[in-house]
Length: 405
Image (tube, rainbow, N blue to C red; front, top):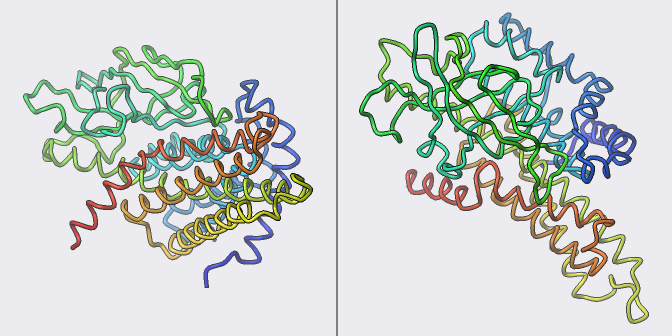
């Protein structure tokens, strides 16, 4: 039976205490005053020794020795607990660690891993993973217009990225683009390449944070590259050009790498969704017990009871998806893209439905920013958009089903 272990529950309670002491008092500043989340995340890393544990595993992997014990829960429980208060913190952390450092650890050479991963894994530096562009959106690979042109000694990069989490403050950026070698190959079929950039490089501009509907504690921005020269050692080894490798082969390898990152992101979104659902349900139950209308607590009325019951069902199902993912991950089984898409699709829709119903339970009070459900409802919507829209998840699931049957 899938359930939280006692050790995991102890960890959840410890992280929740941190959230209540360090994040809740800063919620107004994070959500409405533009405070970046990174000092709080570094405080969490320092108090829980996360960076040290990550570096132990990192050194063990590179040395070929046995890896120190670890579990998916160590990574996902903080996302759940952060999302109960301020979901944007989960995005800021996941983007820097899972997406940016993850891409380097997966596709980088040992030298590249040692050069960039330690600063990311310890949060000494903040990372961003840049794939989305103004004209690509859901057509993430085919619609890429950013280019890498080979020149003597390296590459010249050009292009624009948008909706980049951590973009305004990122120190290290994983930049995804297409090869521009002057060939007649259709732009959509050109090889995908991945480079590592750093703040302050000539020709690289990072915008101020964009104004958004929700997740204000996750700074999102735009990147602009104009004739940015990079040396060969900034091209991740997994997509490095080779005289013996075809353009088609390099393109498949590059898109496969990015797809693996999407699968990881989609699976972890269930953790953020669970945090939102749990908190909305708790707040709604408390409100239903104390809000009196027509002489009775509104929780006595069946229409309100139905809403609460459906919220609990969504909580149970999302929790099971997350527990299943953690169990498989600990066993060394990675979800397929379709499996990760299914988890994201359900969890994102559940979070949106539960948060909307929470606002409805609160009535006019739920529409006011003073009440937490208002923020959580705005925060939940983007779960159906980033990491691939609901429609893209449906496409991935159906394509897999048709291909297998």
